[in-house]
Image (cartoon, rainbow, N blue to C red; front, side, top):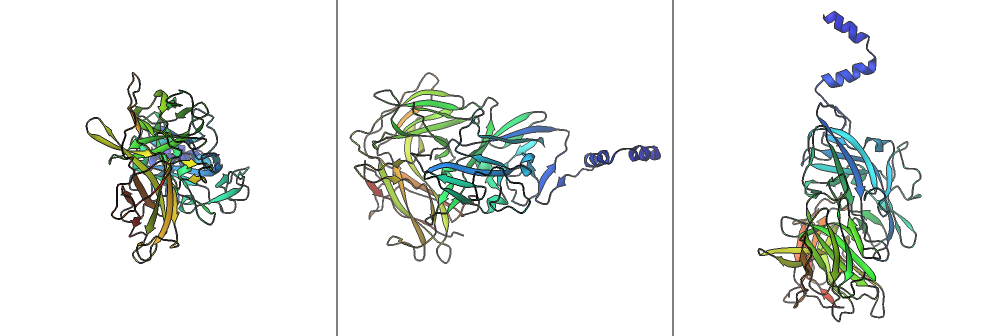
Length: 500
């Protein structure tokens, strides 16, 4: 019997024998990088992966006209704690290895909300806890596959194009080798479940407007802000139309809309941000299932501000209809929050990237308090003063011009946040229609939130603690952080310590 079996195997082609060995031997073939190139299992499902980015920092609200990235791999892992070199990373888009895909994150989605379909793969049944997006190095090894044509034209393969038409390379570090990480906390809806015989649509949102750091010397770096989640097959989402509360017509100016998710501490974190079109329309898609908060701010062409307006607890698949924004009475401009950040290692100044947010509190039924993340604005130059740009992402690199009283030896950086000078108008989502509260009278109070990360690390948190919040101004003794229309309020200094 054994002899017959050997004779039968001897007459099989080599390719058949190799496949047979893979099936029989209870091992997976692992590449040198730790990625599972071949996954054989009787119970598999299919993952389809796409990329999206509704940009909000194109002119006139920002200075980027294009942001190009080149993707060469998308990988997932079943462990929430797997490291960069751990075995078990599984490839979702194998064709990218030989044909990296260059994507303009500021182009218009042309296939049901997504910018690009990156690929698909069959994976064993299980729970996927981590995702990483691997970009092509700006200086790849000789013979490596590269995109053609290359929109970065001699500036690497990942670049930004500014409003003056110039092209600038985006500096990468670990992103080219170990990937842009999307840890469990940034996967909306929790771990991705792969079920036998079923297909799952996974979308990665690359928030370019929150991911580009510009240093004082003109160099652009990447501090990636990414989220991911399973989206519905029809790519449903959330949309609406922003109008002036009196005229019921679109606002002639800059209208920013953010979609946010509340974390375990009651703070809203921005998932995506976009601009309303000339008719006031906006739409976020594709979106995972769940409920979200929509936050809208606006400035007219002459910098006249509107109240921040929010609809909370909005389920995916909702059309919100008209969202009325209330013009701030008598205000000729928004408010500015200006402050300093410092950073130290155990022995001296630290180099740190810091993401900043302006938060306003709202009260909901059941004594629930939520901190809205207010989209940051830019004002245009006018008779009232020069243009002011929000610096929601800053790099602390030097000790020049640190304010008096800063920790000895610390590096520092100044920031500016342009915000409404009024309290928010709030509606709670209801299927029968929306009822917006009038903006509360009295003091307009803010909290500034700062989160530190290691530069060139793929946004790894830095310092102890890595997040600092302040609700105080810089006066002595400190007072609540109150803003006034058209005026600048100085924020209490925030000091990061024990940084790497």
